[in-house]
Image (cartoon, rainbow, N blue to C red; front, side):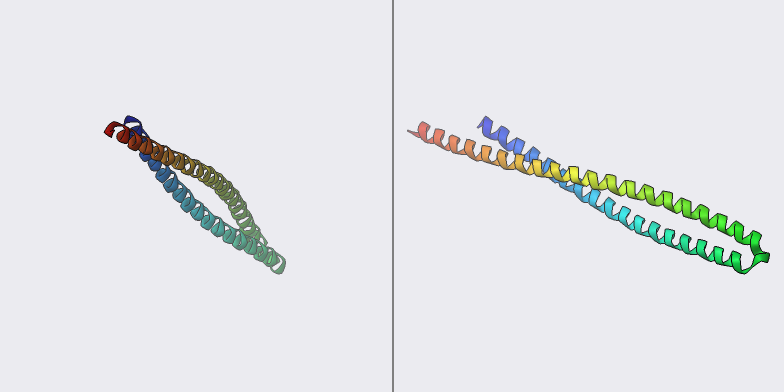
Length: 139
């Protein structure tokens, strides 16, 4: 009985770990989705900054008298573009890290599921032994 209770307690512990790992996986997946949304926004900002930079170049060629203004705006657009690229690189690195974390969590969940299955088999075997012992005692 003590073995069965110990195995049952271990099964409860493994189930709790399994549940916690699944929750962690869900959280990581949610974070990854958020990072992917952020990456999409960054790409849009990158495209807008590139478009703005191209417009500034056209304005510079078209209006020589506004050259100083256009150069200043171009510098600002370039700075924004650089910032957008850095932000995109950061978002991509974070998304990669989250994907790797999700992969590790998934492997941990798989291992916990296997451990849970083994624990359930052990509990079943101990229960069968206990029934056999009860029958032997009844004789």
